[in-house]
Length: 102
Image (cartoon, rainbow, N blue to C red; front, side, top):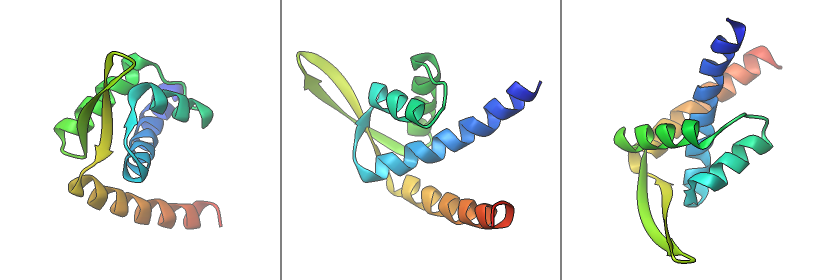
């Protein structure tokens, strides 16, 4: 039960993390899996791609296809709407951090 609740919470954190990196530079899915794993998230392609696709459907991310070593790779970057959502998330995260940590 606790793992299920933590998973829901961490999925929200992952979305903020994804928006943060999408604002910095375009990325591809496997890179994001490795990035999230470096922060302790257990992520598989079966988890990340549905999240990325949903964020794209919600107009938070946009994609551009590039051919890399003969393979088509989808790169994700942030949209204007995604930037607005990220800004709000940053403000709420800062407020929460100050309340629970400081």
